[in-house]
Length: 260
Image: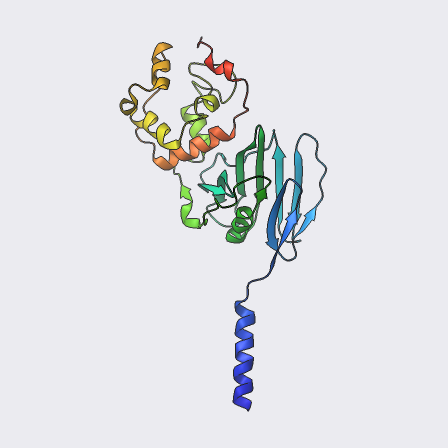
């Protein structure tokens, strides 16, 4: 009898030990997010965008939703890893610190609808839990079937630093992010419909793109972009994510003007 009781006690103990904490859904109106029990909505005052937070009294996650949403993904130091992923049908750029707890875990979605962006961020040692929460975010009228698993293996590290550093050291002397031409066109518009694969070919081997309309336009205006053969695909993907995330979606006609 004592052996049966001991076996029963062990089984109950193991089942309780292996059981994951229950999660619940927090509804912010514009979107929903799942979080472990204990997390709650913290109301915040906002003006130009929908700014808010949620907390479990140990960690606090902040978000900014609107036309002028902040973006931490293109941070300028080299202590972060970067990944691109689909979160319930929306393309997102995600950044995590190379050392857990030594920086922000942030996610930026450059386009929810029209000119609306979304950024969410926190500083926490519980990287995998935070990423799981980010992946649970659901906006209205989106495809929830497109939400592949996200693991830490997807994140890449660049020895050249973050995407903002790549832009400032290699692009900013000839290009603005938005607005008018410098030597070359504003890059948010130039890359608006470009994939990172296309940009990688353009920067490292333009000969493979002979006949492309964009290449022809460059020659027409006598614009010659440098060759960046030392860029890796990870470098270019981070750079494209950063540039596309800065798009102000200004009038298309400005991009079609003749370069000075």
